[in-house]
Image (cartoon, rainbow, N blue to C red; front, side, top):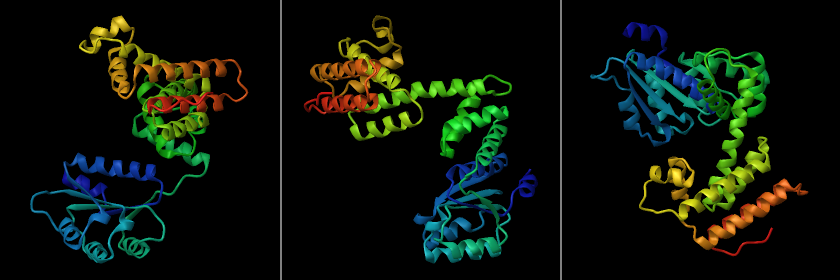
Length: 329
Protein backbone atom coordinates (compact mmCIF):
# COMPACT_ATOMS: atom_id res chain seq x y z
CA UNK A 1 0.00 0.00 0.00
CA UNK A 2 2.90 2.32 0.66
CA UNK A 3 3.84 2.25 -3.00
CA UNK A 4 0.40 3.48 -4.04
CA UNK A 5 0.82 6.53 -1.83
CA UNK A 6 4.29 7.17 -3.16
CA UNK A 7 2.93 6.88 -6.71
CA UNK A 8 0.09 9.33 -6.08
CA UNK A 9 1.82 11.86 -3.84
CA UNK A 10 4.82 14.05 -4.59
CA UNK A 11 7.68 14.61 -2.16
CA UNK A 12 6.61 18.21 -1.55
CA UNK A 13 3.76 20.60 -2.25
CA UNK A 14 3.42 24.35 -2.11
CA UNK A 15 -0.11 25.72 -1.67
CA UNK A 16 0.39 29.30 -2.81
CA UNK A 17 -2.16 32.11 -2.69
CA UNK A 18 -4.47 34.16 -0.50
CA UNK A 19 -7.72 32.27 -1.11
CA UNK A 20 -8.10 30.19 2.02
CA UNK A 21 -11.00 28.11 0.71
CA UNK A 22 -8.91 26.81 -2.18
CA UNK A 23 -6.00 26.04 0.14
CA UNK A 24 -8.38 24.26 2.53
CA UNK A 25 -9.74 22.07 -0.26
CA UNK A 26 -6.30 21.19 -1.60
CA UNK A 27 -5.01 20.43 1.89
CA UNK A 28 -8.03 18.24 2.69
CA UNK A 29 -7.45 16.15 -0.41
CA UNK A 30 -3.76 15.68 0.39
CA UNK A 31 -4.52 14.75 3.99
CA UNK A 32 -7.13 12.23 2.81
CA UNK A 33 -4.52 10.55 0.61
CA UNK A 34 -2.05 10.42 3.48
CA UNK A 35 -4.64 8.96 5.83
CA UNK A 36 -5.42 6.20 3.37
CA UNK A 37 -1.96 4.93 4.21
CA UNK A 38 -2.31 5.57 7.96
CA UNK A 39 0.45 8.15 7.68
CA UNK A 40 1.50 10.10 10.75
CA UNK A 41 0.55 13.73 10.09
CA UNK A 42 2.08 16.69 11.91
CA UNK A 43 0.98 20.31 11.54
CA UNK A 44 3.31 23.18 12.44
CA UNK A 45 2.97 26.96 12.25
CA UNK A 46 5.98 28.61 10.64
CA UNK A 47 6.12 31.61 12.96
CA UNK A 48 6.53 29.32 16.00
CA UNK A 49 9.45 27.29 14.64
CA UNK A 50 13.09 27.63 15.61
CA UNK A 51 16.08 26.05 13.90
CA UNK A 52 16.08 22.93 16.05
CA UNK A 53 12.36 22.29 15.67
CA UNK A 54 12.32 22.57 11.88
CA UNK A 55 15.42 20.36 11.67
CA UNK A 56 13.83 17.69 13.86
CA UNK A 57 10.57 17.81 11.92
CA UNK A 58 12.36 17.24 8.61
CA UNK A 59 14.66 14.50 9.87
CA UNK A 60 13.88 10.87 8.94
CA UNK A 61 11.70 9.06 11.46
CA UNK A 62 12.58 5.67 12.93
CA UNK A 63 8.98 4.94 13.94
CA UNK A 64 6.75 5.76 10.98
CA UNK A 65 6.92 4.34 7.49
CA UNK A 66 4.99 7.23 6.03
CA UNK A 67 4.67 10.76 7.34
CA UNK A 68 3.06 13.99 6.34
CA UNK A 69 4.39 17.34 7.54
CA UNK A 70 2.24 20.46 7.09
CA UNK A 71 3.85 23.87 7.58
CA UNK A 72 1.24 26.63 7.67
CA UNK A 73 1.84 30.36 7.09
CA UNK A 74 5.18 29.71 5.42
CA UNK A 75 5.55 33.45 4.75
CA UNK A 76 6.15 33.84 8.52
CA UNK A 77 9.01 31.33 8.68
CA UNK A 78 11.95 32.96 10.54
CA UNK A 79 14.86 33.85 8.27
CA UNK A 80 17.35 31.66 10.13
CA UNK A 81 15.22 28.52 9.67
CA UNK A 82 14.66 28.86 5.92
CA UNK A 83 18.02 27.28 5.11
CA UNK A 84 16.79 24.03 6.68
CA UNK A 85 13.82 23.91 4.30
CA UNK A 86 15.93 24.56 1.19
CA UNK A 87 18.56 22.06 2.35
CA UNK A 88 15.89 19.42 2.90
CA UNK A 89 14.38 20.00 -0.57
CA UNK A 90 17.75 19.25 -2.15
CA UNK A 91 17.57 15.71 -0.77
CA UNK A 92 14.02 14.95 0.44
CA UNK A 93 13.10 11.99 2.63
CA UNK A 94 11.16 9.50 0.44
CA UNK A 95 8.95 8.54 3.41
CA UNK A 96 7.86 12.15 4.04
CA UNK A 97 5.35 14.28 2.15
CA UNK A 98 6.00 17.94 2.92
CA UNK A 99 3.07 20.34 2.45
CA UNK A 100 3.87 24.05 2.72
CA UNK A 101 1.15 26.72 2.77
CA UNK A 102 1.99 30.31 1.81
CA UNK A 103 -0.59 33.09 1.60
CA UNK A 104 1.10 34.81 -1.32
CA UNK A 105 2.59 38.28 -1.57
CA UNK A 106 6.21 39.34 -1.52
CA UNK A 107 7.02 38.17 2.01
CA UNK A 108 9.28 35.13 1.80
CA UNK A 109 9.46 35.37 -2.01
CA UNK A 110 13.08 34.19 -2.15
CA UNK A 111 12.10 31.00 -0.35
CA UNK A 112 9.17 30.53 -2.73
CA UNK A 113 11.50 30.79 -5.71
CA UNK A 114 13.81 28.16 -4.22
CA UNK A 115 10.90 25.83 -3.49
CA UNK A 116 9.69 26.14 -7.08
CA UNK A 117 13.19 25.37 -8.39
CA UNK A 118 13.32 22.23 -6.25
CA UNK A 119 10.49 20.71 -8.26
CA UNK A 120 7.81 20.91 -5.59
CA UNK A 121 4.28 20.75 -6.99
CA UNK A 122 2.72 24.21 -6.78
CA UNK A 123 -1.04 24.41 -6.23
CA UNK A 124 -2.30 27.90 -7.00
CA UNK A 125 -4.80 29.30 -4.50
CA UNK A 126 -5.46 32.76 -5.90
CA UNK A 127 -8.90 34.41 -5.47
CA UNK A 128 -11.50 33.45 -8.06
CA UNK A 129 -12.83 36.51 -9.86
CA UNK A 130 -14.99 35.19 -12.70
CA UNK A 131 -18.41 33.64 -12.12
CA UNK A 132 -17.41 30.68 -14.28
CA UNK A 133 -14.45 29.97 -11.97
CA UNK A 134 -16.72 29.99 -8.92
CA UNK A 135 -19.16 27.69 -10.68
CA UNK A 136 -16.32 25.28 -11.45
CA UNK A 137 -15.33 25.48 -7.77
CA UNK A 138 -18.87 24.51 -6.72
CA UNK A 139 -18.98 21.71 -9.30
CA UNK A 140 -15.69 20.28 -7.99
CA UNK A 141 -16.83 20.51 -4.37
CA UNK A 142 -19.99 18.60 -5.24
CA UNK A 143 -17.91 15.95 -7.02
CA UNK A 144 -15.82 15.57 -3.85
CA UNK A 145 -19.08 14.89 -2.00
CA UNK A 146 -20.37 12.48 -4.65
CA UNK A 147 -23.13 14.86 -5.76
CA UNK A 148 -24.13 16.69 -8.93
CA UNK A 149 -26.20 19.81 -9.54
CA UNK A 150 -27.86 21.33 -12.58
CA UNK A 151 -26.13 24.33 -14.21
CA UNK A 152 -28.98 26.60 -13.11
CA UNK A 153 -28.67 25.38 -9.50
CA UNK A 154 -24.93 26.04 -9.47
CA UNK A 155 -25.40 29.49 -10.98
CA UNK A 156 -28.12 30.33 -8.45
CA UNK A 157 -25.95 29.22 -5.54
CA UNK A 158 -22.99 31.31 -6.70
CA UNK A 159 -25.20 34.36 -7.26
CA UNK A 160 -26.88 34.06 -3.86
CA UNK A 161 -23.78 33.42 -1.76
CA UNK A 162 -21.57 36.31 -2.85
CA UNK A 163 -17.80 36.54 -3.07
CA UNK A 164 -16.75 34.65 0.09
CA UNK A 165 -15.53 31.23 -1.08
CA UNK A 166 -15.51 29.82 2.45
CA UNK A 167 -19.18 30.73 2.80
CA UNK A 168 -19.82 29.22 -0.64
CA UNK A 169 -17.99 26.04 0.38
CA UNK A 170 -20.06 25.82 3.57
CA UNK A 171 -23.25 26.33 1.57
CA UNK A 172 -22.32 23.51 -0.83
CA UNK A 173 -21.63 21.11 2.06
CA UNK A 174 -24.89 21.97 3.80
CA UNK A 175 -26.90 21.79 0.59
CA UNK A 176 -25.42 18.40 -0.32
CA UNK A 177 -26.23 17.13 3.17
CA UNK A 178 -29.82 18.43 3.27
CA UNK A 179 -30.88 17.60 -0.29
CA UNK A 180 -32.25 14.11 -1.13
CA UNK A 181 -30.21 11.82 -3.36
CA UNK A 182 -30.21 12.70 -7.04
CA UNK A 183 -29.55 15.84 -9.01
CA UNK A 184 -29.59 19.08 -7.01
CA UNK A 185 -31.91 21.52 -8.77
CA UNK A 186 -32.46 25.27 -8.49
CA UNK A 187 -35.56 24.69 -6.33
CA UNK A 188 -33.34 23.03 -3.71
CA UNK A 189 -31.02 26.05 -3.71
CA UNK A 190 -33.96 28.42 -3.24
CA UNK A 191 -35.29 26.32 -0.37
CA UNK A 192 -31.85 26.25 1.26
CA UNK A 193 -31.55 30.03 1.16
CA UNK A 194 -35.01 30.50 2.63
CA UNK A 195 -33.77 28.43 5.57
CA UNK A 196 -30.66 30.59 5.76
CA UNK A 197 -32.83 33.67 6.15
CA UNK A 198 -34.50 32.28 9.25
CA UNK A 199 -31.16 31.22 10.71
CA UNK A 200 -29.66 34.63 10.01
CA UNK A 201 -32.55 36.29 11.84
CA UNK A 202 -31.88 34.20 14.92
CA UNK A 203 -28.15 34.87 14.60
CA UNK A 204 -29.00 38.57 15.01
CA UNK A 205 -31.28 37.72 17.92
CA UNK A 206 -28.50 35.82 19.70
CA UNK A 207 -26.19 38.84 19.54
CA UNK A 208 -28.96 41.18 20.71
CA UNK A 209 -29.93 39.04 23.70
CA UNK A 210 -26.28 38.89 24.73
CA UNK A 211 -26.35 42.70 24.85
CA UNK A 212 -23.51 43.05 22.35
CA UNK A 213 -24.57 46.16 20.44
CA UNK A 214 -21.58 46.38 18.08
CA UNK A 215 -21.77 42.70 17.10
CA UNK A 216 -25.55 42.98 16.78
CA UNK A 217 -25.25 45.78 14.23
CA UNK A 218 -22.59 43.93 12.23
CA UNK A 219 -24.73 40.78 12.12
CA UNK A 220 -27.84 42.82 11.28
CA UNK A 221 -26.14 44.56 8.37
CA UNK A 222 -24.83 41.25 7.05
CA UNK A 223 -28.32 39.77 7.28
CA UNK A 224 -29.84 42.74 5.43
CA UNK A 225 -27.09 42.59 2.79
CA UNK A 226 -27.83 38.92 2.10
CA UNK A 227 -31.54 39.60 1.61
CA UNK A 228 -33.07 39.01 5.02
CA UNK A 229 -36.33 40.91 5.49
CA UNK A 230 -36.37 43.22 8.57
CA UNK A 231 -39.76 41.71 9.45
CA UNK A 232 -38.15 38.27 9.83
CA UNK A 233 -35.31 39.63 11.95
CA UNK A 234 -37.77 41.48 14.19
CA UNK A 235 -39.81 38.30 14.52
CA UNK A 236 -36.72 36.28 15.47
CA UNK A 237 -35.74 38.78 18.20
CA UNK A 238 -39.32 38.85 19.53
CA UNK A 239 -39.47 35.05 19.56
CA UNK A 240 -36.18 34.81 21.49
CA UNK A 241 -37.35 37.39 24.03
CA UNK A 242 -40.64 35.54 24.51
CA UNK A 243 -38.65 32.38 25.10
CA UNK A 244 -36.51 33.79 27.90
CA UNK A 245 -39.60 35.51 29.37
CA UNK A 246 -41.34 32.12 29.58
CA UNK A 247 -38.31 30.44 31.08
CA UNK A 248 -37.79 33.24 33.62
CA UNK A 249 -41.08 32.35 35.31
CA UNK A 250 -40.56 28.59 35.24
CA UNK A 251 -39.38 26.37 38.07
CA UNK A 252 -35.59 26.30 37.86
CA UNK A 253 -35.51 22.91 39.52
CA UNK A 254 -37.38 21.27 36.67
CA UNK A 255 -35.48 19.78 33.76
CA UNK A 256 -36.01 21.13 30.27
CA UNK A 257 -37.84 18.04 29.01
CA UNK A 258 -40.25 18.30 31.95
CA UNK A 259 -41.06 21.93 31.09
CA UNK A 260 -41.36 21.43 27.33
CA UNK A 261 -45.10 20.66 27.30
CA UNK A 262 -45.95 23.36 29.82
CA UNK A 263 -44.03 26.13 28.03
CA UNK A 264 -44.72 24.97 24.47
CA UNK A 265 -41.00 24.91 23.71
CA UNK A 266 -38.56 22.20 22.67
CA UNK A 267 -36.09 21.12 25.39
CA UNK A 268 -33.13 22.57 23.45
CA UNK A 269 -34.98 25.89 23.18
CA UNK A 270 -35.49 25.92 26.94
CA UNK A 271 -31.80 25.16 27.55
CA UNK A 272 -30.78 27.97 25.19
CA UNK A 273 -33.24 30.43 26.78
CA UNK A 274 -31.91 29.58 30.23
CA UNK A 275 -28.39 30.39 29.10
CA UNK A 276 -29.54 33.66 27.54
CA UNK A 277 -31.53 34.62 30.63
CA UNK A 278 -28.33 35.36 32.52
CA UNK A 279 -27.94 39.10 32.94
CA UNK A 280 -31.62 39.91 32.52
CA UNK A 281 -33.99 41.08 35.24
CA UNK A 282 -37.79 41.19 35.12
CA UNK A 283 -37.66 44.98 34.63
CA UNK A 284 -35.07 45.01 31.83
CA UNK A 285 -36.79 42.09 30.09
CA UNK A 286 -40.10 43.97 30.14
CA UNK A 287 -38.39 47.02 28.63
CA UNK A 288 -36.85 44.88 25.89
CA UNK A 289 -40.18 43.23 25.06
CA UNK A 290 -41.82 46.67 24.83
CA UNK A 291 -39.07 47.91 22.51
CA UNK A 292 -39.35 45.01 20.08
CA UNK A 293 -43.17 45.18 20.15
CA UNK A 294 -43.02 48.83 19.12
CA UNK A 295 -40.48 48.00 16.43
CA UNK A 296 -42.67 45.17 15.14
CA UNK A 297 -45.59 47.56 14.74
CA UNK A 298 -43.40 50.06 12.88
CA UNK A 299 -41.78 47.51 10.57
CA UNK A 300 -45.07 45.82 9.69
CA UNK A 301 -46.90 49.12 9.52
CA UNK A 302 -44.82 50.40 6.64
CA UNK A 303 -42.35 52.61 8.48
CA UNK A 304 -40.45 54.92 6.14
CA UNK A 305 -37.16 53.36 7.27
CA UNK A 306 -37.73 49.89 8.80
CA UNK A 307 -34.00 49.19 9.11
CA UNK A 308 -33.54 52.35 11.18
CA UNK A 309 -36.47 51.31 13.40
CA UNK A 310 -34.85 47.90 13.87
CA UNK A 311 -31.46 49.45 14.70
CA UNK A 312 -33.11 51.67 17.31
CA UNK A 313 -34.89 48.67 18.85
CA UNK A 314 -31.63 46.74 19.01
CA UNK A 315 -29.96 49.71 20.69
CA UNK A 316 -32.77 49.86 23.25
CA UNK A 317 -32.61 46.14 23.99
CA UNK A 318 -28.82 46.11 24.34
CA UNK A 319 -28.97 49.11 26.66
CA UNK A 320 -31.67 47.34 28.69
CA UNK A 321 -29.46 44.24 28.94
CA UNK A 322 -26.66 46.47 30.27
CA UNK A 323 -29.03 48.02 32.81
CA UNK A 324 -28.90 51.50 31.24
CA UNK A 325 -31.78 53.73 30.27
CA UNK A 326 -33.50 52.80 27.03
CA UNK A 327 -33.56 55.39 24.28
CA UNK A 328 -37.00 55.84 22.75
CA UNK A 329 -37.60 54.74 19.18
